[in-house]
Image (cartoon, rainbow, N blue to C red; front, side, top):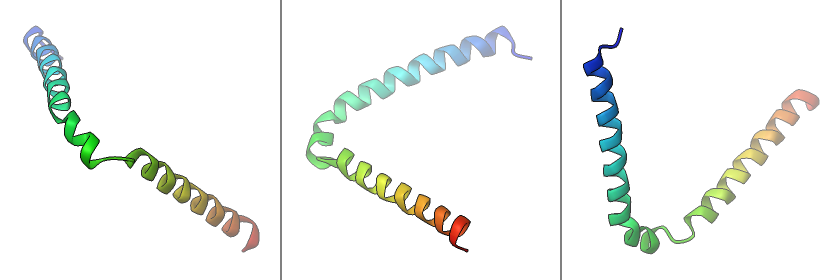
Length: 65
């Protein structure tokens, strides 16, 4: 199914992709601090809010209707 050449290509591609992503992240790390300050808190708040609304709607439709 997979030839040796395809397996070697896939391995090299994955390694190169990971290295490229690490280098790109390090390059943009300074911008992340400036532009995405407190982003994790906002994601946590909105995520928690979405879960609470979902659970409340499931409860309302299962037991009240």
